[in-house]
Each structure stands twice: as C-alpha cells, then as structure tokens.
Picture 1 (cartoon, one colour):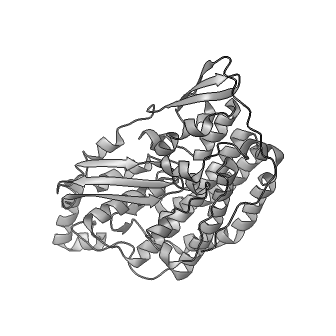
Picture 2 (cartoon, rainbow, N blue to C red):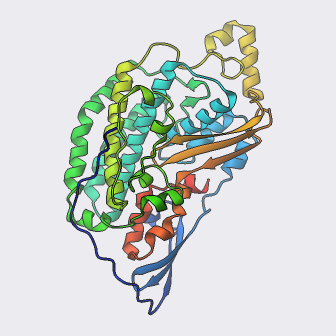
Picture 3 (cartoon, helix red, strand yellow):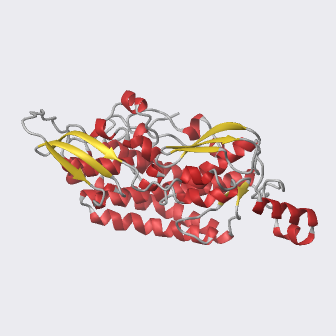
Length: 407
C-alpha cells in the first residue's frame, strides 16, 4: 500500500526551557468559546508557558449509557445522534453495527454500499467542520466560510435523504431507513466533480500560510509510541505515523471492495494532523465515487421480521407482519445472551460500543468508547511546555465534541 507523507515545510520552533520561578493557576473554560463545548481546563503556568494542565470533564454528562439500559435497542438509535451531534450518522453506524454483531445477522449488499457512502460523506462533513473552526480559532476567518459552503451542500443531501440535517437516525439494525433517490445520486456525482477544486482553495489559504504554520508546526507533538500508549486513534494517531485504520485492518461495509489509501504523518504535530484530514477528504471522495459506480441492485434493509420492522405493504395486508410490528414497537427484539465489542473508524477516531446482553429486549449494560474522551487523556502530555494560546490549537487538533466526550 502506498503511503503518502505530508509536505516538508520550514518553520520549526525552538523549545524554550521552563524556569519555574513563579507559578500561576488559570481556569480556561467552561464558557470559553474555543473549548468546543463546556470543557474546563486547570492550567498551571509559568508566565505564559504551561507547566501542567488538568481537564475537568462531565459538564455535559446526560447518562446516555444508562438510558440505553432502560429502552429497546431500536429506541436507542436517536440517542446516538446526540453523542457527536456534528456527525450523527457515524454514531448511528457504529451503534447498529454493534447490535448486528450481537445478533449475528448480515445485511443486504446494497445497504452496505449505501452505509459506506453516507459514512464517508459524514467524514467529509466532519473534517470540513473541523477545518473551518480550527482555522477560525487560530485567526483565519475566510476558511470557515469556504468549508461551510461545502458542508451546507452535503447537509442538504442529508435533508433529502432522511428529512434531517443534524440528528439523522437514518441507519437501522438490518440496513438503512430508506434508499437513495436519483436526485441524491446525481447531486453526489456533481459534488465529487467540484470538490477537488474546493480542497485546493483551502490549501491555497493555509498550506504555506506563515500564521497557520507558526500556530501548527511543532505544536502539540506526540510520538507514535506515546500516541499508542494513550489510546489515541483516527487522524490524531495517524498524524504520528501509526498505520491504524479499522476500515483497512477490520473491513466492514464496502471498504474492502474499493481502492483507497491511509495517509500518515511523520512528526505528530498539529500541522500533520491538519494534513491528514485534508488527505482523508480526498480519499473519502474516491471511496464515495467507487461505491456509487459499483452500487448493486437489491434491498436496502434485511427482511427479518422478528428483528426488523416489516415493510408497510406487508403490515397492511398480512396479520403476521402486523403482529411483528406491534411486538417490535412495544417490547423490541430479544438479543442472545453474551457480550460483544464493535469498533468503527469514525472521523475522530475509533468509536466503539460494548454491549452486554442477558437475552432481553434491551441491553443489560452498554459502554461507549468515545474518541473525544480518550484523546482528552493525552491533553496534559501534549500541552506541557507550550504557550496559553497553543491550548486553543490543541483543543482543536483533537476535534473534540463534548456531547460525545461526557456522554
């Protein structure tokens, strides 16, 4: 597999010694707009240099995992929208994959392709949101407007697909809620034709911008070994040169049926993580294009009436199907006893669901491995020795969403 490397750019900073003559305690957040949610960090400073940083989490804790244990498997799907509310489709995808693994069912081939296409569209939306807000935090306003221009186009496609732009709930256990329309397919092809020129616009503004380089090169450096030790994943891990992507290592959907590469960084700094996300948007475009070209005919959801709600035409004409629908909406389906873990390569990193079943219609225990929460564990390690202003860059380089972090 060909591995791309980020371009070499001059602009490295010399590390300054910590004199530790006087220490100051500073509360950053939880109302600060650059903390990407209600996040508070206790900073111990020497002048403007950070000696220690302690993230204080939990301001947005809503007990999502405990809620899952009180409702049926299907009823929990809309709750996953509210984890990473910027990229709800990926939360749905990760959850239904875990439930399907617990049930031991397979889904139609067409729905695998549809899921993969929408997941990669969501990845692009997530990276566009990250790039625009990261640039805005650092001081580049134009990039924000450019990235949101493309994001709006894709969110309109989601609106066409499922009637919602943000909290989507389109994925279902057994497939997806509805099929693509010809308009959605045509609009996706049009987007893929125009998108490379848009990425060039972003790079024109940022790639060799002196302010961008000064705020990202050699900032929040983490080695591959340390990144693995802290449990990092996604672009944050691959920016340190670690070749770990669940779409390659444990393929699902249609990822093993298309050609694409995993971009890797070399230095593990914020600039590398920016470059990784830019390259991932290009690779996502390739995946979407190939999936659209190969899109097979067939059903978009499995016919498993004891698990999946039967089609309406059957419910209206067949007593057995009507009974199945009634049972699914009242008691849900019963999963076999046991426990499973299923990880999905979301745009932020590995989003995993651990489910324990006692053979009932709801999970006995459910635990979410959210990349935002895991990444905040490395904050002190990555922030030590940098300036206060760099803390904003480090918040952004994780692409954290506190709804997912606190759950």
